[in-house]
Every structure is written in structure tokens, then in C-alpha cells.
Image (tube, rainbow, N blue to C red; front, side, top):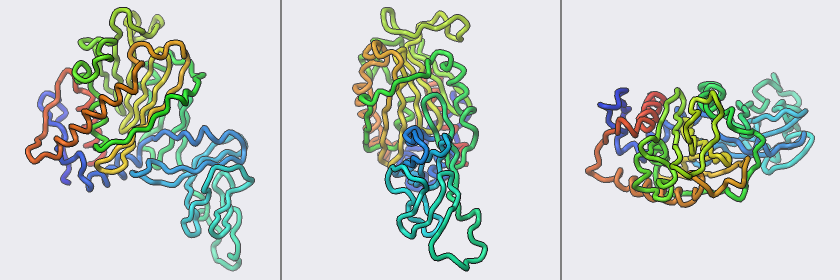
Length: 359
């Protein structure tokens, strides 16, 4: 597919070509240019709680498909390639605790920091071992209760999340409780970008989300842009749940019902008075998407109130319009659309970031 341009002036700009939502060639380019340099949530890093622990995982199954392993040694958590440097077999095949990592194929052993330790029947091999025989390290950083990895990060995680830290960091008591009962995984037939498009605008709320529209105001819904994402602010209607904002906060005096933070390209961090909801949009193929929902709470008594209630229903409503839009994008008469200058600045920003990353 030919490269596409997005005019920086939203008043003149046209949106992505319909073909972009499902083109296999573009999807392949996105793997290397959009997702490989991005930061992705890594729950396995939080699962290695004792020295000697190792937890294998696949980074973005269906997209990057990169075999990795989280390890812990001397209190330090790392992420490493899980591909044996001998013949490519996975080194760690299931979560376990051991004194070293041992490939089950030919017995090559590694330390938990990735260093090569030993290999049977290699006596006489010249220039062996070398640095190439170690397991490659992968960038791993922590933010709040969450860990993130990147195969080749374009920028540090702190820079990517700077907007969220500045706006929400002081509001969040980071001693969060994981709410596993809220875990949901959804899959549907649509391109991942359509799901992000939908998330990044409030224009559809009064038409698609009746219950949510009763909890938040439409006219004062606001989107703020940052180099690597957006922050949407939803304000509570009278009588609905809102944050208690301290003096000095940029929104002090306002009744913020939710901070919806999107991080390029595929992560959403939704902050409510009761806690944090994380959405990770995983492309499974050009026309198939998986969305992971995870939650952490700091005030369980507030769940079920305000903008952060009924999230399952909101998701079903969003999926329905996204799947229907995918069908429209495949139509012979589909054309590039226009952006609302007042309500779709987030979508426009997303498309500009995509165009820049793809070159």
C-alpha cells in the first residue's frame, strides 16, 4: 500500500484511506515500524516474585510474536529473549523456579541475567563462547504498578508517560489492589486502528453509550494532545461521581469523572475515582483484534458509580460500531473522510503519528 499523508491542519485534513484498515502489506509494516519500537504492558514481569523465577511469554501474539522471558535474580527483574542461541528452541517453556535457565533441546544453560553458562559437546569450538551466545536483553521499565517492555524503544517510557504523570500522578495512591474479577479478553473482526479511532473521540458517546452519556457531560468533554498520546477529560453531571481534586491541580474546581489516557499506539489507561482500568489493543491480524481489560482499585466502594461503571456494556457497544465500521471500510464506494475540528482532534493526532512512524 502506498504511504499516506495526514494534513497537520485538522480543518483541511482527510482521514486514513479505507484500504488502510485491513491491508496486509500495511499491517506488516506496522509490526516493524509502529509496534516493535513501542512500549507494551508486561504482566509477566510482576509474576517473577522470587529469585530464580522465570516466566515465558509472547509479546503481542498475532502481531510481533516475539518469544520473551521475564526473570528475577538478586532482586532484579529482567526481560530477555527466550530463543536459544544454539538452534532457536524456546529456553523456558513454562513458568518455573530454578538455579539457571536450561534449554530442553540440547541442554544449553544460561544465567537469569542472560549470560551463557555452559553447553554440552562444544569442546574445540573456536571463538566460543562469545557475547552472541548470551540471551539478548529487552528493555524493561516500571511505572506505578505496571511493567512495560520494548524491543527497540523509540523514546524512554518516562517520556511516553509524561503527560499522564503530570496530570494524574499526584491523584493516584499507587498502592493499588489488583481486581482480577474484572479481567476480560474480547476478540472481534475489525482492524485494531478502528478500535483506537473510536476510543479517541467523544463524538459518538451520545449516540452509542446511553448510560455513559447520562453520567458525563458532552459539551465540555475535552481532548488534550501530547507527543506520544492524548488525554481525554470527561466531566461529571450534577450528582454523579467525580474526583476530589486538590488545590493547585490544573483542573481544580472542575468535576472530572474520568481521565482517559491513550498511549501510542495501542494502550489506554483509564483513571476513575475508584481506580485504574487498563485496555491493551492487540492486533491479531489485519482484520482481527483482541482487547485486554485489566483493573486495579484503590477504593472498591466506589466501583459501580459514575463514568467507571458498566464498562462491559460500554465495550459491547463500542465493539458493535467498530465491527460495523470495518464492513463499511471494505465497501467499493468507501472514501477518505473528514475530521470534526472540535471533537476528533485525538483521532487526527493518532493518524498523524501513524503516518510519521510508517514514513
